Length: 466
Image 1: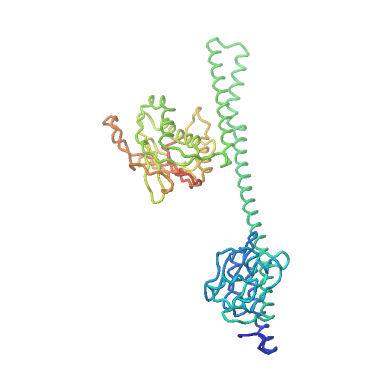
Image 2: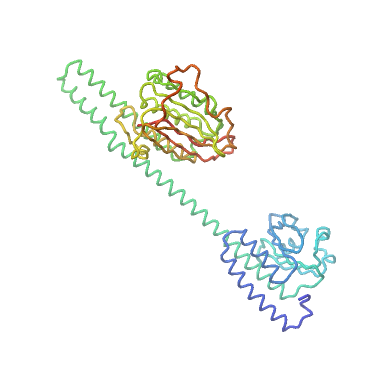
């Protein structure tokens, strides 16, 4: 159809009925669309096919400008460009909330002729999306001079009205989806807080009972005055130890309950080598007492993490390796490049962990050996710290076989160490330059959540039987 007004009324009516029937299918497609991009693609193609135009454009209002978002045409138009509302036909249609029908674009003051000259357009029809306070416009373009018919404009306007409803539905759907995400986050946070409360309740109901019982029992003995002075001093020492254990339990539980919010761990660039050195210095006395040999760690990557909490994890891993690895244990830390990540490994050659205990050791208050010096929350706290960095920690162990503790970072985010496996320190005694094969593997993986250079992604400690 080259000119609607030259056709007979009966032919026009037949075309209009067919166009409206096609429009029903478009409406059904729009009713299933859940985002703006899908709506734009549907409307862009339908606007051209319904009228048989040579081109169609989808325009959205962006403040005081018209944004030509997408198009379907026999030649390039203005996709991606913006024009002032007052300087284009789509802006006129939005500002006046009514269609613009132009037979000759070079003979209409509303048309910016310079913008149209590079195109094929000779005639056009532009209708607003939403008749009250329009939010956009749909344009049809023809390569030959013709006056768009009333039926064509009516079909195009019906499409625009349906598009308005679809866009509003997409906004509502998006808001609903965001609310669902928010509710899921709140539910997760509530579950985490409930778990933390259960930990605290467990501490009150079980772990604090023992020191309280000790304090009460020895206080009663002292109060009776039947014990010798030497025994009384010993009982006071028991009471003091029980009080210190209560304080340690309360402090551990308090720190555990504070680890539910990732926002409480601001990240910054820090050298893992420096943090590992700090952990070694902090444990220097214990390391010497146990005759522990620690090697590697001089060329670890610079990462983005919370230095305080990362140091806590490294210190805890080293503490457990030293305490539970036995006298003369060897501890090794190094960094390797794995695809797009760094893998930081801490390993020792101490005893392994039974397979059935590999997950249980991360539970609060789970200890493989009775130890009054710890609360049984160490690995649970490490897991929470890693979770707040977007990661996780797990253990692999084969008693009597190799044990390693890798940690991973995205390669493009970390500074590359000069060497992947640092050489054995020259000062090690000959018998220690080739340590026994490690026997347990703790793995952690952290997703990078910062734009800072180098985000720490994981760590594998030595054997931690706590």
